[in-house]
Length: 193
Ligand SMILES: [Fe+2]
Image 1 (cartoon, rainbow, N blue to C red):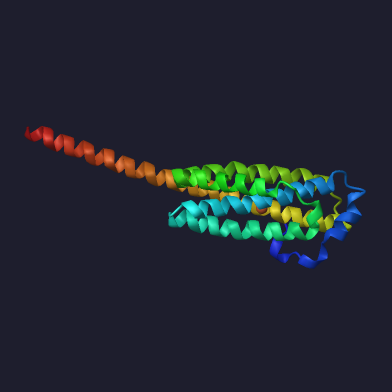
Image 2 (image 1 turned 120 degrees about the horizontal axis):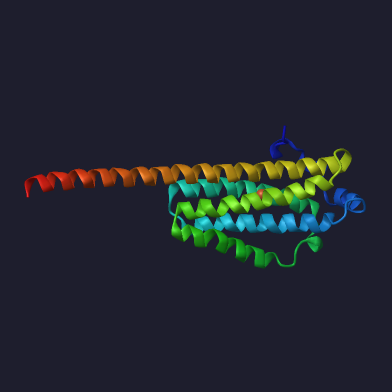
């Protein structure tokens, strides 16, 4: 059973915990810096979608995912003092905003098709770190936090895929109805003239 972020106490992990673990987990600070930068980009992706799209379904999707990305970012922010965060955060914000806003210009399918691989990438990124962490003690607590974030990413990917399939099915059905009606009209016309 995967941990859920809401059930994990937010006060149990902080930068002191990470400093204590950093000696025994190689690359831990860099990993967490990349997570924090990634979640900064994720927040910007959903803000970018919301800045452009007027589609109610996409806006609902983006608002929900924005709340989750902000929660992930807040939790990761507790683990990293400002001086350990990426100095390129402004760049990740711009890149994220463009990754959300540009697909949103082309419509819902493009947005879902963008979120799917992004969430898959983040899922694997968290998985690599989870494997490096011990299962118990403060390492276990950090592991549970990353697993909860990972589970949210997998959920986002599932939602994006399901919405994409549903939307494509609707478009296909609308097209099929149009072809059917067009054929019937052609036959009716050809009977007369
Ligand atoms: Fe996230």
